[in-house]
Length: 100
Ligand code: HEM
Image 1 (cartoon, rainbow, N blue to C red):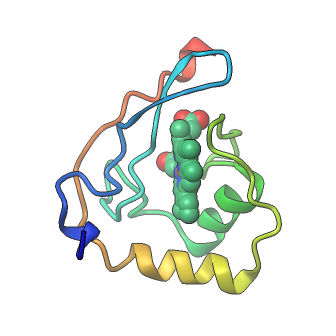
Image 2: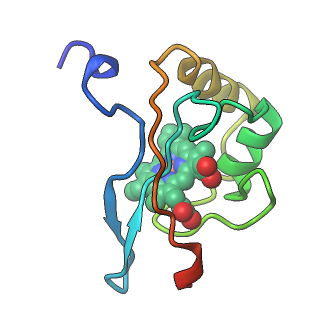
């Protein structure tokens, strides 16, 4: 695929993943949408999510999202810069925090 960024739903979240125990969990919307994505996050918020697996509120992100704690500042910045270039998608994901 030459332009993955142009495929429907790209990085808009809601993809069903499974934990090691087989529990369903859905990927987050990491596009820049202000209401349903990372539009109100700062680079610092994003850095915490990538390296410490914490969301903007400090809550721990669950598997299969992992803390990529070996990531350098430059790597975090590069991914963040890339995410600013992809289309924003309005998509509320059922994160089901209540279930565990
Ligand atoms: C460069 C790669 C990745 C980036 C930039 C990234 C970014 C993020 C961010 C910023 C969040 C939190 C968003 C929020 O709380 O609103 C998140 C959550 C999540 N990510 Fe990743 N992620 C990456 C790789 C992965 C991989 C490889 C997987 C699965 C194999 C994954 C699965 C998930 C899931 C399931 C969540 C939601 C976790 C929860 O609700 O507790 N991510 N990701």
